[in-house]
Image (cartoon, rainbow, N blue to C red; front, side, top):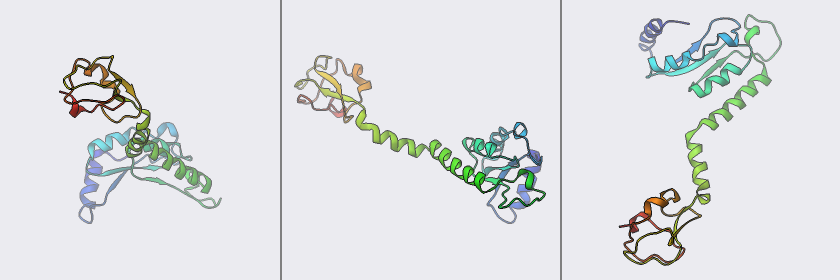
Length: 188
């Protein structure tokens, strides 16, 4: 593993030619044992080199450290790959087609499970299962809201049911009919 000073020096030279740089965390033991992968170094690299993408150069003989690096935010994984059983200097830490497919599939699944945009879509889909505040019976203008005239029902359309007790004692700007949702702009 190069020191931070050595990485900065190398970046200065590379930036003379182009700006597309990914810094790869790499342990140069061939093969690297899982216990020696030191994946926490990825977070240190991300802190020291905020301007650059951080990846992993994985020299283990399996895919576990590659998969474990995904939640740490790596943007690339470099892994030695072989399509046959021919012996080469890299054979000890190369993976075959099945393990490469497993790495790809696991990476995609794990990345999707960490993706915040997916989470938002799931929450929006489930909005119909949430509750909001509705009129339990007709409520008139300037009438106080009480636990006798409101109820929490599905779907969530107006004020969230979590605001139930904050509404008690407030007054309404307009008449609300029974079973209608109550909205913030209707509260005095």
